[in-house]
Structures are given as structure tokens and as C-alpha cells.
Length: 388
Ligand code: TYM
Image (cartoon, helix red, strand yellow):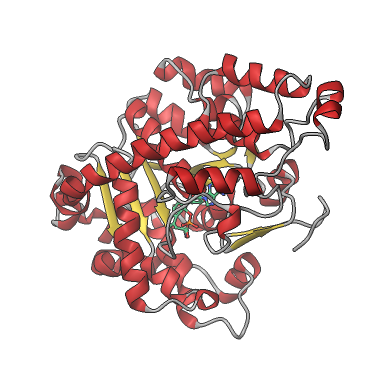
């Protein structure tokens, strides 16, 4: 793994090095989220999610156009997804909670793609089909726990819904040649042909409605949207909009991203209070000083402290509280152990609530998959305009 700021890499299948987000905006050709846009959101819906305010969502494509469409009464729809390769960790669920806020505020339809095909095809994972099926069902429960509007949300798995996806996917696929896919995704002659076709599948939900699509996700998924925007208008659709978040850093420090396959870097949604405590005490990278005396004298560095960053990025909504924690840590009043305790308490509460909602979601998950208003429409022939 790379360590210098100049040598990081972000792809849909992995992140290495310490990500320089400013540089990424230039590299990917996206736009920074500006204060004017933030003000516009506040004007339209009366408030701004703290992850926007703090620029955890730091970059976008055509968000201004999606907001204008909303302002003009046309509206937009939301699309996001999950690759079911294992248990979900905190980083995976954050975009979904954020998406719920967008859905509530903008009253938008939401499509959630669960890419069982992608995770089976990704050879480095070497997952059996049974494993992928298991994680698909488990992950869908975690997603359903977030509490989306059951009449406006459709959660689908690719292999199950493929009969509707495929006719659109071939139209997309015919517009993407191997040379482009190779350049964008780094495919080579050893890549299996399923993976080479897969990008067409992830693009399809951006074409589910003849409105602008807005995709909230971490920036790793942007390569798909870049291609979508090259071909959508030719196919008679809108170029998609997107909002990109930074990665919630691994517990162990800012190298790469939280990874399900490295338990020390992640808190899983299924972790209990004891496990959380042990992991945070043992692994959470600290910006504190070597001794208490030095810490009291010189203070800690919240900008590299993972406990502080997790609170700032997604756990502590209250701006005043987060500011106080930051100041107290910087001037040595708050010790590393005390900061970790604040984090642990927040994590335990967040996950306890999530688990309760997950239990309840078992009873209503079919609304999202088959029985809610939007799901029913998607399974019926009502929404076949995309296919014609
Ligand atoms: P997956 O399962 O790798 O990730 C699910 C979502 O979590 C985001 N994410 C993170 N966000 C913050 N901090 C992190 N450390 C972190 N790690 C992952 C991802 O950006 C994603 O939003 N191919 C996709 C599935 C997919 C999809 C989509 C995702 C299909 N269609 C549309 C987003 C939007 C995947 O494997 O995601």
C-alpha cells in the first residue's frame, strides 16, 4: 500500500494510500461542493445535513441542475447501491442514512441496487454463489433498517431483476467499447468477461426514469457516472447528477478505506458493545501525545485522530459539541482515552438503535422489494418506458 500523499489510488474496487481529495476532484473532473450550493439546498428544503455542511460530501456532478429541476417542480430521483461481499461496516451504511435524509427532504423516489452479480464476478474475493446470496439477504436487512419511505423505495438484486435490467443494459453496453472500459476501470486481458460487461449493469438504474438521477455515494463509484454522462443523452436520457463523499477512514489511520476483510480497520454493524470498546481502545489511531504530561502541555491533533474524525464526519451532529471536543483535544484538556470513550458511547448508541430497526425491518422488507407502491410499479409493466 502506498503511503505518500502523491501516490494514492481510488477505484470502484479499492482505495490505497492517503487520499488527496482536492487532487481527486481534478483527476476525476468533478466539481467541488460550493458554499453557494449549500445555501441553495438550505433555501429549498429549510436545512442542510451536517455531512453537507462539513463537506464530508465534498464534490458533485450537476447537483445544481438537480436542484433546479426540484425548484421547477420537475423533481429528480435518487439511486444508490451496495455490493454484497460480506458484512456491512459503518462506512457502507453512512451513504444510506444520508440518502434517507435526501429522500425525506426532496420527497424523491429511490432505487437501491444490490449487485450480487458484481460480487460473484469479482475474482479476488473468490466468493461462492451461496455466500453472495447470504450476504445479499443480510445486507438488504441493514439497508431496510435505515427507514426509507416504503412507497417510494425499490430495493432490488441484479440477478433477480435482470429481466428488466438487461434490455436497457445492452443499449448501454453497445455504447462502451473495451478501450474505454479498460482505461476507466483498469481491465486487462485476464479480466473475466462478466466483469467487463458489469459497468453497463451499474449504469442502468440511472435510466429508470426520464428525470434527472441524483446519486449519493462515496467518490469511489464515480467512474461509472463519468461513462454514464458520456452516453445518456444519446440514449434519450439525462446525464446523471452525483454527490460524492469522502471515505470514513479506517480505524487504524488514514491509509486506504475501511475494509470488511480487515476487521481491525472497521466496525461492523453487527459488532456488540464489548467488541466496539476493544477495537476502539486497541486500534483507533490517535492524534494524542506520547505521555499525558506532553498531551496536557502541547495538546493533540484532531485532524489525524480517527476517533475525532469519525465523530466529525458522521456521528456527532451537534456543531457546538463537535467544536468543543475539537478545541479541548487540541489544547490538551481532553485526553486520548477520554476522546475514545466519547466515540465508543456514540458508536454503541448508534448501533444499538440500528440493530433494533434491523429486527423490525424483517417484517417490512418485502415492501421495499415487492409490495410497496414503487416496488409494485417496477415489477409490473407500468414503468416500461425505459425499455421501449
Ligand atoms: P460498496 O458495497 O463497495 O459500497 C456501498 C456504498 O458505501 C460507500 N462506501 C463508503 N462510504 C464512506 N466511507 C467508506 N469507507 C466507504 N466504503 C464504501 C460506497 O461508495 C457505496 O456508496 N458497486 C457498488 C454497488 C453499487 C452502487 C450503486 C453504489 C451499485 N450501484 C450506486 C453506489 C451507487 C459497491 O460495490 O458498493
